[in-house]
Image (cartoon, rainbow, N blue to C red; front, side, top):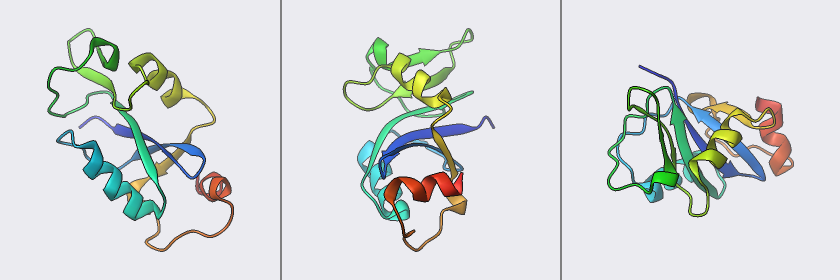
Amino acid sequence: MAEQYIIAHADKSVLRISGLSVRGLNTAQLEAILSDKLHSFVRVIGVTGEGVEMDVYNPDPDQIRRDERGVIDALALAEGITVTDLTRMSVNEKIVEVDFDRIPDTPLSGCAKERWIRRS
């Protein structure tokens, strides 16, 4: 299975979260799961990967990118963010990569931004 990343904004940082499989497109539920795990407000920006296995209905062409085989490899979910913006964000060196399974169950202390820099 191809690696999928959820691109989200939390704690003054853009995070690339791996290790969480997304099957349906319910951004409110996904944000609730991530907010509970990260102990912070989370805004899901999009999903990227070699293959995004999700149910997608009538997406705006600016919100979706397919590879040469027609497989979705990026899907922008936040209003005002295009798939081009999402792709740029997902490969940016400043983005913090976080494995969902390695996020502690207790809130991390310290500066909101610094807690993710230390974990990357």
